[in-house]
Length: 172
Picture 1 (cartoon, rainbow, N blue to C red):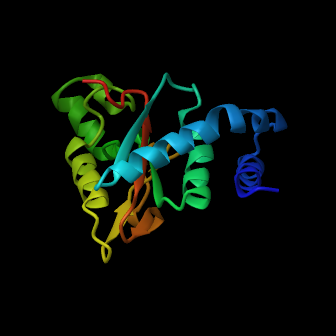
Picture 2 (cartoon, rainbow, N blue to C red; picture 1 turned 90 degrees about the horizontal axis):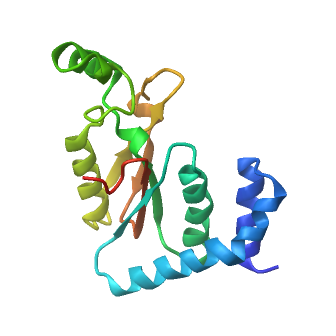
């Protein structure tokens, strides 16, 4: 069994996806992974690839299936970041709701993402510092708040690809 198939099967099982997803490997995921690998080989800096789609359209699942292929088959250090991970804290959104508009208290409304933190995070992930450790925030939807920093993922060293997914990624 080739490494792409094994990697894909393992990820599908880990995510608890139906076996029908396996048929999309050769038609969708492998060509996209090969395309990303080709792009990365032409660039000196890490790639930031935006994955956009409506809520519930499968962006997170797409990235969760693509990232292991990029890492294990092509050797690309890959980080997945969701727009959800960079929401302002619950407290900050409450303050925005009082100061700007009541809808700022809920997730998804423009202005509820911490844009300066996002820019800083992407800058630190793409600067190519082999020695740096970068904490990647995670959002806890059940708590409706950013997870505590000790629950964040830590990326040690440089990365090759950042898959940045979200309903408004790339919109301006």
